[in-house]
Length: 445
Image (tube, rainbow, N blue to C red; front, side, top):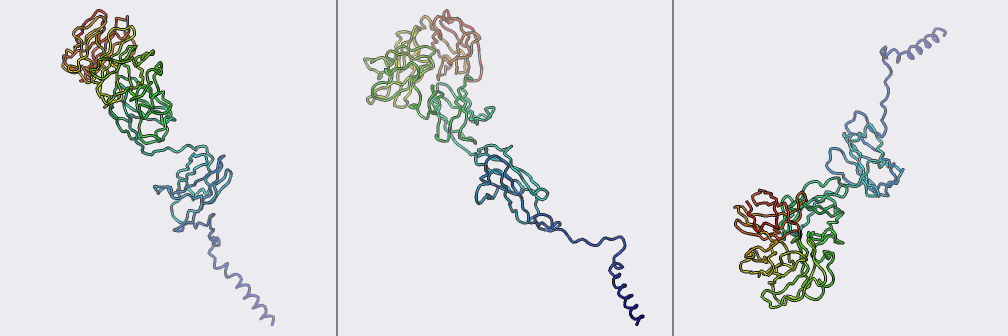
């Protein structure tokens, strides 16, 4: 019996040693695999991913987008219920997939947007937004606006710039808009922009924080920068300073009169062509300064063609225009082409253009006749004091063809010495100093 008991004890000990004897020397027991946080199986073909989004900003998040970096769009809003309040967090399940890199975007309650790009959510399951890089979204909506040029000069450039920009950017026009014409512009951006108009004589006008979404056009005319609202018609323009009720009282059509003669107009008469009586002075007790405008009321009674007679304040010459078609336009432009010698009759049959006065037989005192002695038309003439910046183009919207003449009155009464700049249609410029008090006729090369 003792031998049997000892044999059983020996067999039991051998059985207990068998697992240890089966394990190779130097090898640790196998460790069961550990599931990483979030339930993703390392090395597996698919991963079920979750990212925790935390709002550390001072305002609530109203919209949350999480999109793979391989996608071209943001997808759907991940906040299907209440906004994500400041200091709160939310888990976002991203489903199964191999891609780990995602872009995230939040929209705050104040309208600002913040993004976190190229986030590796396999390594970092927490993405925090703190508002430090939040900004108003950039509006890239395509918009169209019509520029109506009712100024006396050609528009060379148009700039439409966001009010937050530090420079004007690119020219939105890409061409020119002649006086009386219009052009449609296309631009991308916000409704509120700063507008800059550059004319062909390098002068510019600006209007800040213009809302272009509530209108389809902008009227560029004297006074457009000071109008209460961006003007779309001439009726939206403010009255010129110094133009009293006598200039616009009474019934009839409203006519805009623009003065770009370089002189002050003291009396203004507008009457049908061929009328025996010029009628009343349309300015009354007021005057029309240079580079300003005034609205007058005119009873046309079916007539279209009118004559204009103007008298200057303490300056030689007078205004004479005939054949002004007020059925086609509600504007009268007083420019250098309408200035003639005192008492010289206007002759519509020989006028250089509709509404222009016929040139006088001989220049009077204080008048210098400019003659184009070249072959290319003259498109602009500037007469200013030496060293002074350029003022208005004395030709206005007229061109001086080869051999044609133009009577230039003294831009400033009593001042004789001027620096002349002549611009030709072929691009040439010529400059000369002249005594306009002593020179009766000047031939342009």
